[in-house]
Amino acid sequence: MSVSQKLSEAPFSSTDLRLPRSVSTQTGLALEVAHLTAAIGQEIASRERLNRELEIAREVQEHILPQHPPAIAGLDYSVLCRPAREVGGDYYDFLKLPGGKLGLAIEDVSGKGIGAALLMANLCASLRGQEETGKQVQALGSKWKAVTLDQRDRAALHQAAAAIESSFGPVSILFANAGIQQFHPLLEMEDGDWDITIDNNLTGTCNVLRAFVPAMVKREYGRVILTTSTQGQHGTFLGAAYSASKWGIIGL
Image 1 (spheres, helix red, strand yellow):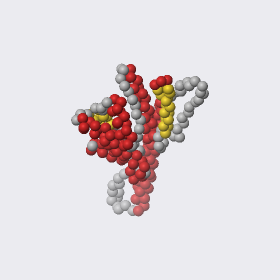
Image 2 (cartoon, rainbow, N blue to C red; image 1 turned 60 degrees about the horizontal axis):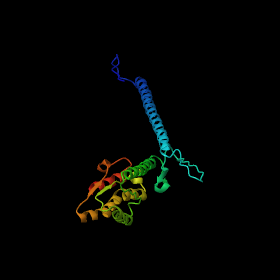
Image 3 (tube, rainbow, N blue to C red; image 1 turned 90 degrees about the horizontal axis):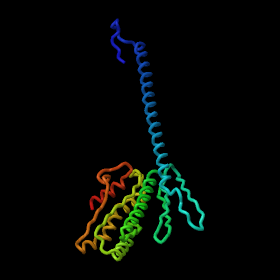
């Protein structure tokens, strides 16, 4: 709003200025309310989208779990998984093992919410992928063995390396892929959350190299493949420990 000179060219009095000031104040308040209303509307729409996405994620996660548990002679049982939030890190599965045996996998990711759900989905895909890979390899008449251990345990890794070479011969290709993520601001992160991410992603990868690569060096032959992430090249929101671990692998 602009005000020009009076027709009489007399100066404005305090009474003259009272009206435009009042109008300006009311107009400013109205504009501020309009802006706040628009911002609140956008926030509500964003939350509605997030809630809908979480609802879809919950439905997807429910379908990841076995829908029809296998029948076991002489045993009546039922299963139920109910996460504390929309999605969670609880997981169970049934695996058909050689010799007509049945394997039961039960997992509970530390924490709740989206981060735990992502880790749960990754574990599920890895477990079922190993099972399917094993079936395909055996169908070709080749030997197959899946070994589950903690890559932070150097002694267990060295024992596994020795057992694998004893059963299959020299290891010529090593593929190392490790990755878990804790979603916390760096300054609010607990020591345990930082340690478990670095220990699994970075130290665990180093432990695998130290367990298998010396034999390759001795034979003067071998191939090593390490996977990392572009998040190791830049910081990520709530992912300081993960980014640091992946940058460390790039540095290897």
